[in-house]
Amino acid sequence: MKLHIHDTLTRSKTEFVPIDASDVRMYVCGPTVYDHAHIGNARPVVVFDVLSRLLRRLYSKVTYVRNITDVDDKINARAQESGEDIREITTRTTDIFHRDMAALGAMTPDVEPRATDHIVEMVRMIEDLIAKGNAYAEEGHALFSVPSMPGYGQLSKLDKRDIIAGARVDIAPYKRDPQDFVLWKPSNDRQPGWDSPWGRGRPGWHIECSAMSLVHLGESFDIHGGGLDLIFPHHENEIAQSKCAHGAHSFAKYWMHNGYLMSEGEKMSKSLGNFYTVHDLLEEYPGEAIRLALLKSHYRQPLDFTKDGLREAKTDLDRFYGGLRRHTGIDIGPADVPVEVLSALCDDLNTPAALSALHKCLSDLNTAQGKDLKDLKDLKSRLLAAGQLLGLLTQDPEDWFKWQPAGRADAGLSDAEINTLILARTEARSNRDFAASDRIRDTLAAQDVVLEDSASGTIWRRK
RNA sequence: GGCGCGGUGGCGGAGAGGCUACGCAGCGGAUUGCAAAUCCGUGAACACCGGUUCGAAUCCGGUCCGCGCCUCCA
Image (cartoon, rainbow, N blue to C red; front, side, top):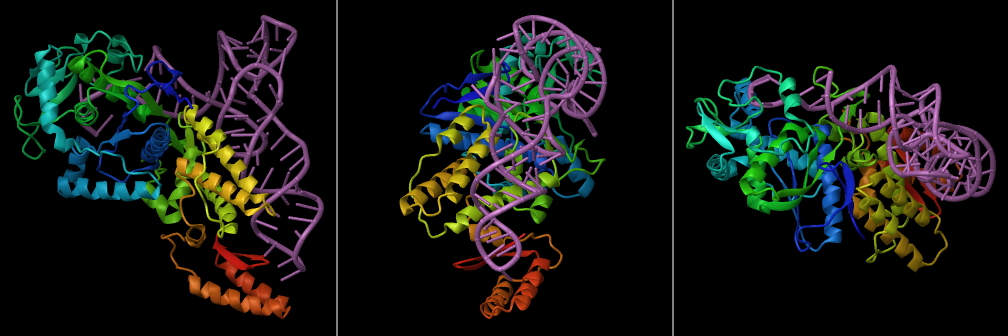
């Protein structure tokens, strides 16, 4: 099946044709590790995780690179405030990021390069740009000369006048042109720095991604992804650096950007305090519910992330896992992903349409009572295969229903206590003592434990 | 000011010139000791004003509302 994606360069949906079908290469901008990832950081991780899963289904080999930015002035500022060592901040934050993203069901990228491991390549690239006349050194800085690149501004569709008119600060004296941007800047003794032809310093923001994509994917690769907010200046400048260094036909063939996030109807901002970190949300909700809440809208649409939406996503998953739990005894076999799911994803990653098809799979399974075993096995296998492609429905239903929030003040009833109460209730029911039976059910309900009676016994779940 | 995105039923959210998804919630029914779960059925929408068209939620123009970006520092 042919994959179509929306390319930011042309602002239109186009057929995806890989440069090399035997190795599809994708680069996505990863986090700057100075603080916990918020839900806005999680969106591109989840979106491009789905894309990488889809690509792996369509092509024999995929190389997915997502970097860690561990040198940045925001990190330096954090170290200044807290007194914590920069290395400690970046290591600790990276570990938490890994755990949080794993909880969202995001697979580890094939390569996760760190900026500080690629300083040599960055310096080499800057030297190359200077040698080619696309950059210059001035007062300990190295700067990219924007007028040296004829097509600058193609990704963001900004022209020179707009960029200068929009500049929010006075133009630094070491710039030859107001649009020029920093490739390398000098560091003082308290700032991290590396020796370079321009003195001890550190890289500018954009050069790292140009250098890391070069090392791990080559001069040309297929897809470059990230959030909408990175189009300008970050991606525009990456294009400038890489194309000037390696030729007009080099660098990313397609650009994909996910839409921005709002939170509870307002734009996310620290002053409003409506800033959900993934880490905090995971204290209250299963990671899979967060993932589903993100995938319920199309990746390019604006998304208003709310607790209500999260609760709804959890309810959706209760239904899916409920269906699976009812068929626990049915083994699964190899199954094709339903064509509706695959075609939805191949249409520019239309996850809402794919989820709609996933619900159809569930209905098919739920209405299959009385059908023979082979049908049930097929239906269950198809549902799970479809879920797998979306990174959903990957856990044991029992684990899903027994999950309880880590952030809860009182731990509630243990599994064993619940089972004991259910046993007592079953005894009461067999004596037709429904008053006692209902009392026990009310007790459990007060602890957010819901019972379901069936011919084969009573099962329970936490709400 | 410049560039760009969006406004769909009570809610979430696809689609996109005639076939009007899907989910949650609601309502009616089946089932159940009663529930829960499940199943069956069901009402309900395309921000506003013009235009194009046999036909517009979908295309065009305008209005209103919400949001993003406008380098290096923050």
